[in-house]
Length: 345
Length: 249
Image (cartoon, rainbow over all chains, first blue to last red; front, side):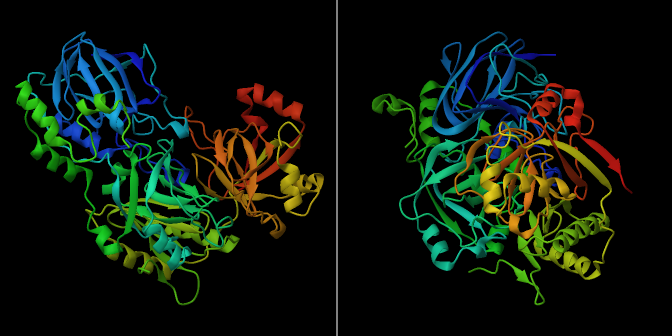
């Protein structure tokens, strides 16, 4: 069985898949990739199904190698990556030769990068998933000298592909749907919430991200004595001091602080990928509008597969491709050197 | 305001969206033994009904979330099916199936906010401990973290609000309180609840055949032990924190 060797790793590198649904009654949230779309993009590039397990890299990658040639894909946050010094463009599949060093640096745009291997990571599933769930104490962050089993690439000769990824690193308008506690907020508070520009606070992890804003906190009269109730990923919870947190994959399953609404799944990746300082604003859909955005993982993967194209390997074209993929507010990498700031702001 | 809830004309009952793939049936906004019993009975009824497209059914203190696959059913059809089940809901046997006795230390090393919580409840620390250990509490829900029980209900003077600031870290096994309930923490956790004791009992054992110790509806009685006794229990991982479990029915 081929193996992945971790030569070094940033502090937040974990194995992730689409998570562990079905344990809410026992208090365990689904977990899984913070940016599920990025995981599906990797699955599309590598002809995998929705069961693919990958490495999620929060903020910083590491140095990795495998003992067999196999294809890899890098999706999600834009991270400087190279194989034995040769740059690897994002959102492509590439062959990683046996023993070659894949080096992945810090995120230039976004937060969570994904490194996928054709055939997937095949660690032993726990309760139906390979995903580390750090807040539940399932699994752990990877460290240097970890060795993980890989499934093996069934078709390493498949030509490289690319997939034009949507920008989800520059925040913007995030769609909320109403939830069971939206009506605890009076109309004026709700209107003010929807007209406020928030900035992603540095505090945040796979459980949730804190948002900052100028002006008064957002509260409800009964804010500290509400009966605790069920929570889902995407819920926007106002803690006791009136500060919003958007809850992510490793959220708690029950909580008492009031929730003003739920970020729809299609916009949750943009929330998770908003680096500190990124500006976010919310809009509230009605239930029918929200329900119309539902798309199954299988449907999404089918669409992404169809969007994959052969990678044109001419270096000039690759440079152009990078520009084509990035939209305003996200840097292409070269201008990062110009402003000397590796964070998106 | 959008039409977020279908309110029952007779009371608190509401059917609300909770995520694109979920419907929440809430029996009351206020916790009571009746609302909690109704939620658990309804959860059992929804599971037994085997409705098409339903993916997951989970109870909380006063509500049940029914998850669905939008490719197989929709919110409208599911809501109708749930209304039909609500109309058929009858009283069920809600007596506890099991009684747990769990040692807890309330001494100065293990109960940093006991005095503060007791004061908010209008009690001395000794009286607060006496009241906590005299009661057989029920597991009203499992949640927040894996296996973590919401226990209640304490008498009305224990209706202590959560703190407005989070305590950065309360240890695994901690006994905390707010809003007439107690929780034993599954893991080290930031929290707005006040820590009033410490157990060595593991509610979440991911490496065991039975990863979740407690079930909703179980009865729990706390037994006061000294700080030294608790340290001995903590040092012995096979002791299950000194807890015992008696099957009642």
